[in-house]
Amino acid sequence: MQFKFNIPNKITLIRVSLIPLFAVILLIDIPYKNILAAFIFGMLSVSDFLDGYFARKKKQVTQLGKLIDFCFRFFGRVLCQKEQTSNSVGKAY
Image (cartoon, rainbow, N blue to C red; front, top):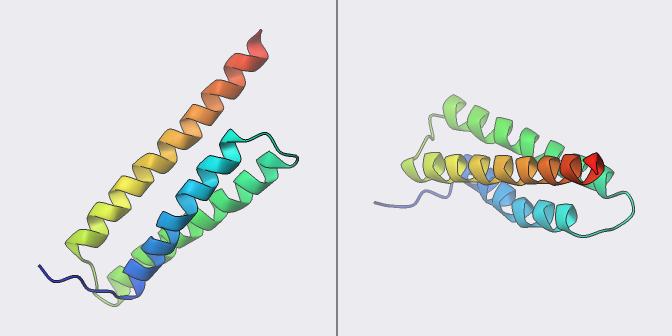
């Protein structure tokens, strides 16, 4: 299996680098944390759309791209769900 470093895979790798930054912002206590997290989440969403769009339009869909895309959608959702759950539990008491 040969790795194709095409435009959609490059966009996916950028998204891969943003996930840890998103996690760190959610975990640390800084001013404007929610605004920064929302901005990065927006960037993640736009990059997810763009990589899928370019992969289909240019017919550059790869198995590696599908795998990476699935994994980081899952991790992004887990991070968002964890943050939402921890905020709602903390405010209930």
